[in-house]
Length: 142
Image 1 (spheres, helix red, strand yellow):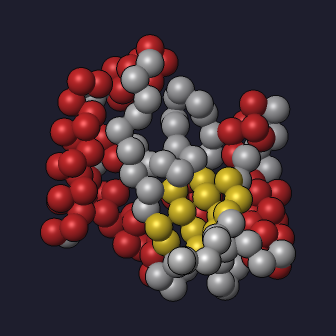
Image 2 (image 1 turned 90 degrees about the horizontal axis):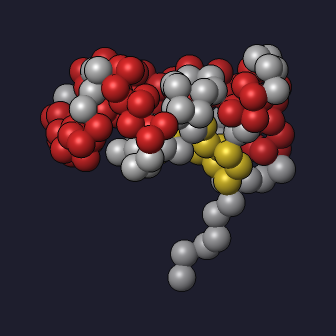
């Protein structure tokens, strides 16, 4: 049986809701999670539905502030981004953290707020899963 691994979801959304935009506190939490022996830290994604700091930029700060802990996206919505730029960003972040990145990818929850987010960005919500699959395939090729 594989050993139990424990991670910490950085509360970027909670900070944004409170109007606290000091991302250094979140990076400090990641440092503390590493010091406490946790296995990973995660950053969520949602530019409009559940606004918070951009997960890739936040994890870039965490990457340079830590040395061991795994970094992950929980979860990233590739359909909202251009696939070539996203592949480039993920590859750069993975190099920055020395191969500690896990790219958690998803299609988005089927609710009105998420549909509105996709519409605001100009992406058809009903195509989100197909776009997710296409993005994964393209990123693997890139």
